[in-house]
Length: 331
Ligand code: UDP
Ligand code: MG
Image (cartoon, rainbow, N blue to C red; front, side, top):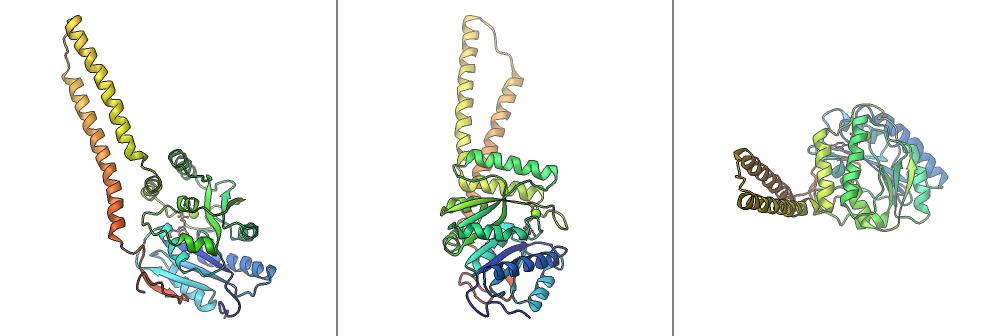
């Protein structure tokens, strides 16, 4: 049995969100251990200088059982188990809350981001950066997922005034000082890539490989992707709200011109206005536009509502290995 943190400071924390990944966990553990033990040896750290924090986001398969099993065999593996599914970005946030390493690595649990790239990220971090983010050279996903991702970045970059690079993977490494500052962000509807860019510090990117999933299927469905896109846009921009004003202005200008045209036609050309159909179309169109924008405003109000409720971001049902108890909630 290997005991974590028996000597020297903890150098690395690897945070991995897990949602129904039972087929991937053994392989993830095997490859991560190989990479991290070698990285520790090369950097002359003891091989206990790292922890792997697996955050089970309410899995319905045997993922949590496997995590507990791994912890019994190797106490460098630690685990948190959520009381239900809270979502990818929240699971990562929980892992970051408990990570104690000098450098903290985030990665997905399906091996799409190869663990073998971690040493490259660490080398770059040592050059004096606070956040080094992996950029996918080529995305190994199906056509629909690639298209969705492309559209997402077009919308996001079009609306945001953030210096943010496209094709970011979750695989990234950060310094302790970056993380302790980042933890002050406690908004609930969080879009991590945007917040990471917003936080500042010295950031760098490096190209990394992107593989197809080792096993299983994507845990993102169309609804989750749409929610993420809206979250991303709404957390960094009021543009959707301003759009109501812009559209209102355009429509009233067009209607004004049209109204004047009708009066001129009636008075000077004596052409009468027929048109039940056009009136109905105009009313329905305007009704639709107004309802759509009411809905949009509602979304923003909903976000304000969920922020002022101040509920905890996540609830933890069980944990293995993690001893520190954050004051913000009860375990
Ligand atoms: N995940 C999670 N909670 C969720 C959805 C996903 O913790 O509600 C995890 C999942 O197990 C994986 C990572 O987040 O480790 C990325 O998910 P996925 O591979 O399904 O996303 P994609 O690569 O398709 O964007
Ligand atoms: Mg994936």
